[in-house]
Length: 227
Image (tube, rainbow, N blue to C red; front, side, top):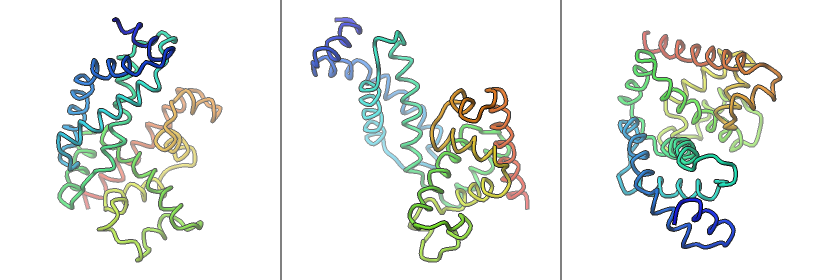
């Protein structure tokens, strides 16, 4: 049975055997993607292969549930996109950042222009900012939240130095438009085209604002570690 027949059998006949056949067919491919992504962050993420397998398995199931075979987009293309996004989101939850590792991160970002690492950390920092605001149930600024002695850094990964630095950069050095663009991209997970429509700016302009924000944050980090 080819892919299309499996999709039709699963979607239209609700045949779980067809779904299981799709899972079996793409599992090895998913696991290889998961390992590739994990290796990029292995210095900062404490996971074993069984845990990586679990994350990739779940992301494959999510992709299968979300895929619409009637739209003509190859599943392998859809799957790659979903997996890369989902696995990075999951890995960010397991980041184990020691003081030594923080320095590695800062150096990679400032010297090697590692946008992928920086963007992953920005995404996590945005989620942490809104999570921390929600936990306080008031309108305290992020700076005041970070000074709250009732929140212990050793018990809360959001308050590790690397995230504190990123939150400070986002709060203090970005323009309103830059903050808005980063929030929409990294917290709301929206595409540039969607952000462009919502802000009534061209896609090229949104891209410029995004690049400007990333550059400011990189320079902020570079200045911090050079002093």
